[in-house]
Length: 389
Image (cartoon, rainbow, N blue to C red; front, side, top):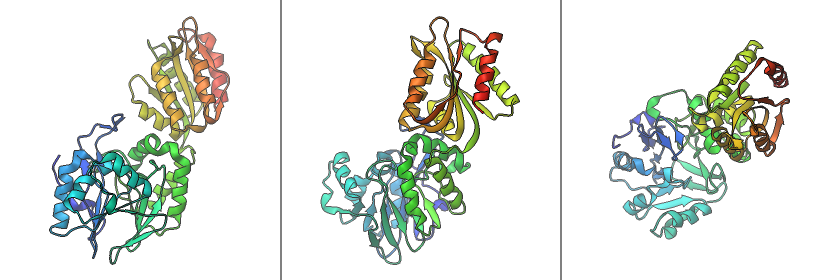
């Protein structure tokens, strides 16, 4: 992991990329599957030099090689700390040790968190900034805006006024390594709904601040820089953060023990498609729960189908519903299908989850199977299909 990142990721001649493109990471934050990820950091070259964030410990060697290539014998005057999560802040202490005269810039909460993560006392070098404060580097001017809970409380974003660059912290971030050069939207939605999605109101507040700025470039801490697709990125984030579905269709996650619930769901999916519905099914015993969270937020309707297990919900479905609840799932119509051979209770338990969420409409009837789907169940499925329209 010592390969220096290609310079194609520079924003301009004076705003250089110093980050790390991690092509080997398979699980992010010990829970989210990904084909690599980028940890983005930039160096702004001017009369005074500013470094924008550091990178994860996995990229330490590559990061300092990049800094050496960019800086040479020059010394940075500022390290701007937008976010204290370890995937961006891991190298603060080491960098501060290399440049003892460098000031650390962040919110007041960032200053508090420095003492939590690091043994070295850096408070005498820390410069707390408030909403709208500026730091002049020469021809570049940094302006800071607070972005609490997008997605930690200490977060701020930075607007560079001369080149109109919006350093957006984790906002507009994505999974996936830059080297993959894949379409932004797929990795972005997976990232957003699992990392930031709970905090829609806070994202809306940040978007209002961004709307007052003339932005030519968006540079997040993960993923590609945005230049030509800024309007699309902002509009997409606006939709997601208002908990509005981006797609019309029915998402059907299912948790089947022996395959009978799965068979019933797949037959029902075909029937819904014959009615003209877009249907996406997902086997929760095979797919990662984060993928199901993403799909649930993307589509305007969902039908949860699960077997009863130990007088509860079969665990893969219980896991999904738990994740949806803590991610603030809302503003959707949902249907319920349960299965049980002698005492089905999955529907009751699933309903309790949905009733604890905001603006969820539960379609009736609930379909209750006894072991396998039979012709006598057809009317219940037809009624549910009509109710989901």
